[in-house]
Image 1 (cartoon, rainbow, N blue to C red):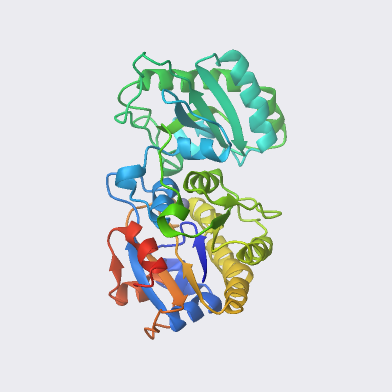
Image 2: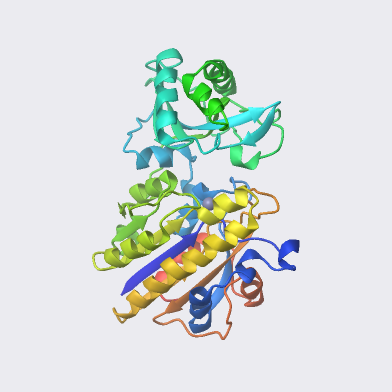
Length: 403
Ligand SMILES: [Zn+2]
């Protein structure tokens, strides 16, 4: 049996006025996803408990079948796993975004999609000026970087599970004043953020960006801190060897933590310009070597964060045409297979933010009866009456053929 999961990040949405009251999934032309809905079933799952952050870090852990109430420790330690950085028992990982804040407003949580090279140059300076044997910066991809706090054994940690931070992508266009770190150790984090603003004011990378008319990185935004979670491997849980195709460190990290291999597709960017066909092709090749292959596409989420409904529809149609259709066709050569389409969480274009709530899924294949619903979208999924309140039960039931 072969299994494929396709995750169009943040694709779940609300009715949009400019689409005549349709959601982007309803308005987009998605013949391959609709065919899966028709051949099998649609339903809804709720992937993020209300007390946890509505984001990919929790929602994808849920999709993999791990209860985030038990296993989620924070976003940053998942990304450190992706980078092969080891955290000791007293260490904390902290997400360090390059952001643009003007007049206390979060104008851009990506600092104009600053390049990986520019971020690296900034963090080299930061390590010299702000770093120490306690504070260690680690460059990631584009605006997504990391800061490690190296603790000492026997010395109480300044941070705890009660240290609260705000995700910068949830602050877009709003004031940041109420969203600096709170709780144990918050003063250390806030001080580092303030020092970063001083350092960035005069950094050559910003002078260059200014002269090109690009947004400057005004601050490091620190958030999502945590220690390494311990997850039982996917193979020992489900008996399946898995592979992940994604351009985002968070998903690479989750793959590392559950013991999946990562496959890098050429031209995968984690943005609207990603090489969709390259990801589809990489997945088809991976199916010959693995039992379960997961393709994650960040583009619909990015389009939502920018409030661009046309780009969201374009991304969904490209996923349908270049990823879902060819993978579904390839799976049929294996005889027994199941395919699952599901976003992690909703990211409505109207709010530009991740949110809690139901997401629609569609699946078909061996042992899944046709329910006769011919469309993959939020409305059809709600009408199906299939609701998985604890989203982490979707994976074990799907693999066991009990949906
Ligand atoms: Zn997401």
